[in-house]
Figure 1 (cartoon, rainbow, N blue to C red):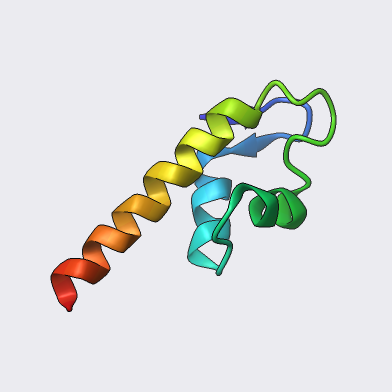
Figure 2 (figure 1 turned 180 degrees about the vertical axis):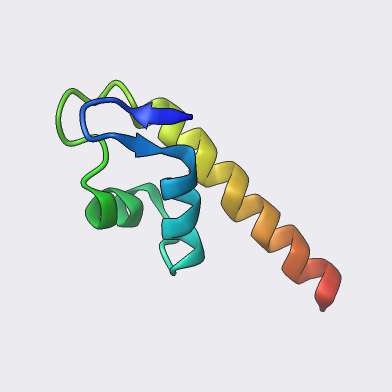
Length: 64
């Protein structure tokens, strides 16, 4: 699903950025140039980032 229409960024692009080390909206923004045009994607992007980071943290907690 497209999250940022201005830049053509998908939810998978955001998830891939997190898998490649991004840990916050700011880091994803810097990696993908996300939310730097009109900004309407920022709330959805923040939600995806939060969900993805939470899932990773939960997996790490179970593994520990």
